[in-house]
Length: 100
Image 1: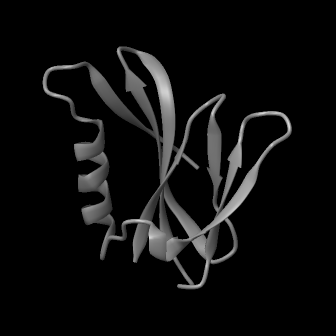
Image 2: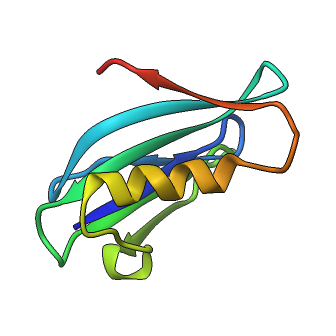
Image 3: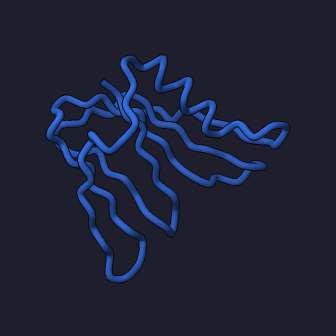
């Protein structure tokens, strides 16, 4: 099972924790400006909780169960969903894979 984690600068970040394995990472660009980061992660344990940290001071931390996230049977399904998330008609959007 795979999930997609998102992080946005100056707003929040989702962290890969024990029980998750980062498989692929992408930067999302909207009209050549980086807007977000996405990580496709394999769920190693169904009881895992994803750590989500706000960018404010003080930082707020939430632990969200992976069962709340939309899940995908394989990595190709997760990639397809990520592409559909960033596609907005004829707007200039791009995913750039980041080597880990």
